[in-house]
Length: 261
Image 1 (cartoon, rainbow, N blue to C red):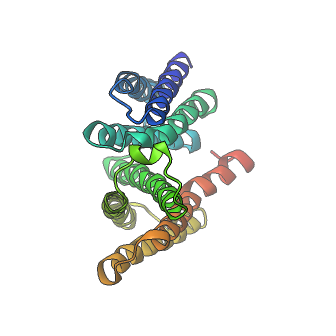
Image 2 (image 1 turned 45 degrees about the vertical axis):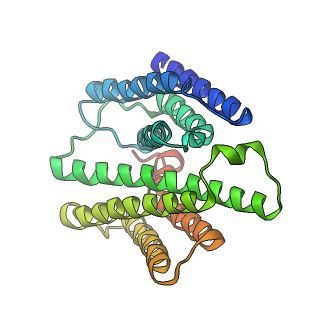
Image 3 (image 1 turned 60 degrees about the vertical axis):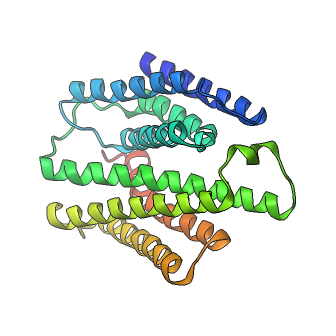
């Protein structure tokens, strides 16, 4: 519990430093240290819990926390290497919240061991969720940037973002990586998961495939028809909503409502 709260405070400190930097037209590097501390503690929280449980834990809050950790790590990589540190203003508080939620409600006394094939499937899924989650945040940023420019509202936070075309290009590159990871998730599911269309898995499978089709259609539309702007934002958010419902929506119902672990 202590690790989670310290990690959450470090995340929030980093987000605060970034927000202050954005307001002052330049975020600097002060946010990096608390972010690294938060990432290390967040990861340590999961490692310690896995050792106690004796296996990889992928229940609702654990998976949610791992996706938040992945999004925070990707944000740190993006921010340290370019002008996308502003992502942390949204992503780091999310990571803080899911880390605390996991520490408070996510621990299990024992988890069912997974063989390497199912672990590969699970890690592909978590990486896909984290990457496409970043794409969803980028889509929100793109929408806000386009809206502000259309209205000629030149806010200070606009200068913290890359130019519109660069942000749009980053969005589609991120979607392409996430789409590849989602494809790997579906393929490993077909190959390694028994009864993929069993009653408790069919909705996850169908929604995941629908999300894959929407993301694939968006990439195809970008390549063949030059889709961009509001259309790209809309379909990115639709696809991400389907993906969230595929696992987290169904797991929430199973674990929180029906109390099936």
